[in-house]
Image 1 (cartoon, rainbow, N blue to C red):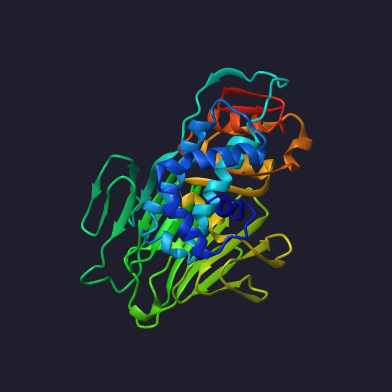
Image 2: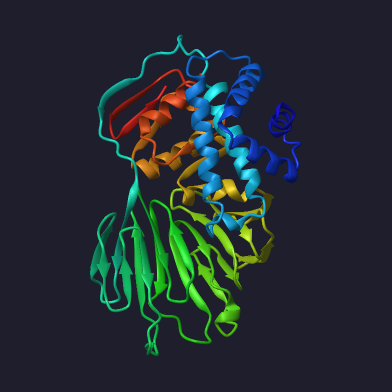
Length: 379
């Protein structure tokens, strides 16, 4: 088993060996082996090691238990997601949880910061608004919501003209919507989507991501008489036949990020069309319209729909933007040099903001932080 764990940490493990390791890790007796290995590997001797190993096991099991869900099937390499979860959690818990006794104690003046939740505002075709919240149901003739997801029904007699609804997600919110063609969309905090109540048969299916971040699982064109699916934006258009991808187009950022998970898309910025393959990301500079395509870890890019934050060598300034949207806070760096420091780790969106700040503070990257109402000062 130690050989397999070593290969896991050095990223030389094969798919067959991952299978073998899964079986071994499901045996509670092997927790002691993993505990001993991690202690030796990182040369650590922490009193909390046992509880942290248990947490690692829970993380692994949660991934294993959800691997049959459709979203998990996005990846042929789901097993490596399990391996990554072990590595990320252990590295966060053990590498960064070193003695921080020299640091300054955080200052909590008044913490009013709440963890994000499912909430949105639905704007109907007549202009009226419906507030959607977790735990509250909403039902009308052609749509329904359980407080977490909005589902549209295909009308028996669709109107000849297209009518639109808007779904607006505030800071500190998230929501899902299933369009009338079966396309599923996950909407992140501070996002607004415009879409038809019903699509017209035979015509291109078009929605508009006005701003924010959305992950799409598009219903294939083969079941819609060949009708293509398009995601429009002020600066680019995405054309697909049936695929899975993520678009991030926030108003306070100069770049639009399109990440392809499965299938194929074409990014059109009115100057040129750029094709993407799975595990590629296009970065469109909205100022000069340049597009750069880079390889990415698609799993990390869409971790937010699974309830996680996965940061791979992300600067603290970018991480701060993600946290500010989910927790609806303002993050201010007192020392601007800290903004460029890169950080790697996995966090749960269900954690409160203090837990996350403690983890970052324990890396010794920052010396202290202060919470005052809905403002966080990083020192």
